[in-house]
Length: 332
Image (cartoon, rainbow, N blue to C red; front, side):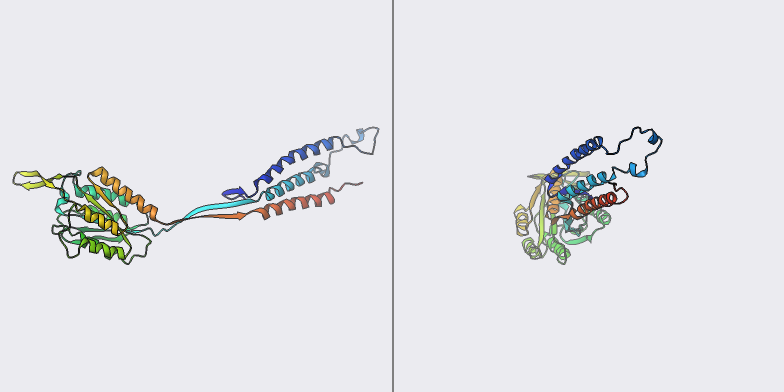
């Protein structure tokens, strides 16, 4: 009868339980002062007589009555067993990460460089997800799917670690990358479809304009979070020379206006990362945003326990009446 969470609909009735100790005191005092109409000159003849089972059980009816009354009082207080829980859509969401692997991602304004910093935070992001299908699209002058949508995070992370600049011809085809992501998400049946676009440049390759691709994503209710990476001003870039690696400063040219527009069109957000710490914070914020967007329904189930308690209380009282009227019946 007692569940994991028990409450009372009318708890004030429980104060009636305070009357029970008074009934017990009254019963004890009453039996101490009980008298009989039969008088004997001496009780020596009964000294060796052991009390029978009826004598031992003479207080049982009163005990049954007290227990029965207590159970009825609890029943009046309307005990309720309640359970709470959350129904979370366990299919999660579908996420495609779009990662820029152009040559400029080797700039070392991040430690050790932009591409490695982006991979590190992406790996942490993957570790923080559950029940979400995640895919990986990489792009430079062209785009291709490095990993299709999967729940096998081990495979996904291994493929992510293999990503490096130079896998495709250089350039920045943002529009093509978004179109590739749309192709992966358009048939998704999940409640939420998301792209995370990370780039450090301006769209200069590909047949599809970034804003046109964003319109297509909007049509399929795909939300795009855009992340522009790169410090403000210039960044050190490693150049291979006959005398080893030399560094030269290259201008940081992030097309923030276009990235902001893409995010705005698709109900996403734009972020600017100028260092490793900022990049980690951005992915952490995206992680939390997408967790809170998953619909959660709470429920509270209440079961009334009045009838079991009342039935048990009446059973004790009925048992008392039966015992008192049968084998513990008093002779006149």
